[in-house]
Amino acid sequence: TIDADIDATQKEFMQTNDNFVIDSRLGWFWEPKSFKVFLTLDDETAVSRVMDDIEHNPLRKGELSKDHTELLEKLRGRFESERARYKTYYGIENHFDPAHFDLVIDTKENDVDTVVQLVLAGFEKWKKTT
Image (tube, rainbow, N blue to C red; front, side, top):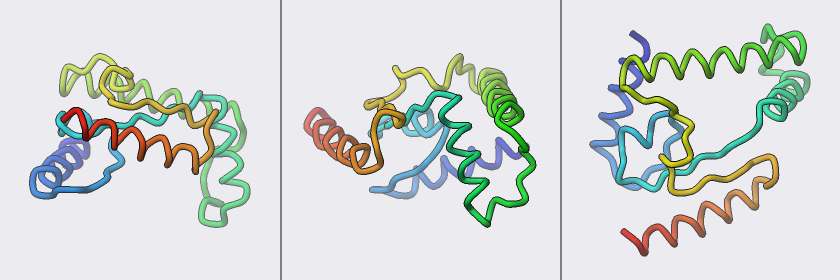
């Protein structure tokens, strides 16, 4: 499956490299000794941001989501599909459980610069405990 291929590639990369940042739904699962950050965002805000990007980003003009409600349904469907697959494949009940992460940041309440500062500060604190 495509999931197995992606997972194998990520595991191999993590096992053969040091000092990297990776965006991965299951990175915390594959590399439990790493510094794990979860950037949260409520569904409604996520959809609004995506809709805005589709409207203003010429690279996204061909995307099929026509309105907020349709995109929200797609987003929630994707999350449920992931949840079911990860439970079946790996026994993970909730891959978004904050307990899996060292730092959780709400990206609705924090702009990019603030998120960067929080991650850097969190990483420095985490290094002192490992």
